[in-house]
Amino acid sequence: MAVSWEEYFRLASQENLSKKTQERNADNCPPVLRLLEKRQELADVDQRLRAQKEVFQTTMAALKLRREQLEQKEQEIQGSFVRFDKFLQDAGARRSCALRRAAEERHQAGSQQAEVLRLRAHLEELQRERARLQSRLQRLEPCARLLGRVLEQLPEFQDVSELVARFDALANTQAAMRLTERQQLRQVEEERARLQRLRDTWRDELLRLRQRRAQLLERLEAARERTLQWESKWVQIQNTAAEKTLLLGRSRMSALNMFQLVCQHQKQPPALDIEDTEGQLEQVKLFMLDLSAMLARLPQPLPPVQGPGQTKAPAP
Image 1 (cartoon, one colour):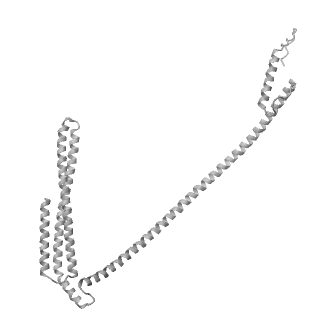
Image 2 (cartoon, rainbow, N blue to C red):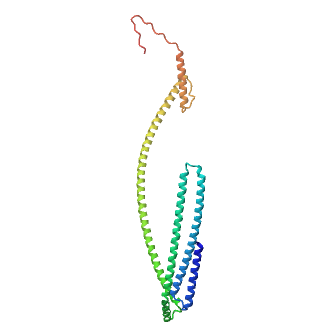
Image 3 (cartoon, rainbow, N blue to C red):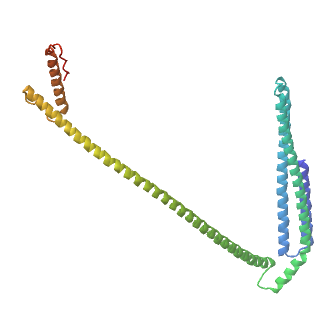
């Protein structure tokens, strides 16, 4: 199918070349602006036709490859049907899945076929456009002769191409100035939008900073309250520590007094340091244990005999 289209495009190109050769031989008038433009349009149309031809050939090749892939996949599916006969339980589900995929691929193939038809229709439309441009070129031949007469009345221009170049330069300058104006207007609009975004961003940032400031003030107040609480607790701890220190001093003085009394009773000089409170208490403890043991070894006094009518005196 691709070979027939190549033959068609080759014949169409030869026909166009023969027509151009006949027109060139028939009319030997100097080139003019409209004639050059229309010939350039014809060249563009030919170039688009060649591009469409390449796209069409690429599409046909892809379609052919896709069809081969579809045939290969269909063969694989048929082979899988033979192998899947052993698995009767899940054969139905897998087969339906494979058929669904094949249907989707056939649908895609149909879509590509529709694309091919669309490209053919577009190619025919381009051919009709080419014929229309050729007829328009023939209608503009008098305009080309008119430009030749105008050139004869303007000696500052040597030929039609120079006149056309001057006109094109002026038109291009005007188009460039309009484009520059549009670009400048677009830049102004972009800068305005950027300024508005910056203003919005500044407002959002200011609002965020105000919210942050309020949160920090709340945290500061909470920190102040916690500081007052901890200061109150610290004062309470200091007072408690002072009371404990005073009680400890009194305890140490009492232990020192008892140790000195023990030393006086034993008629021995104090052998411990004044600051050794634990040693002093240990000595007092030993003395009390010795004294308790000594008292335990002493004989107990007998109770007095009571006569008739006497009552036992209560124990003190």
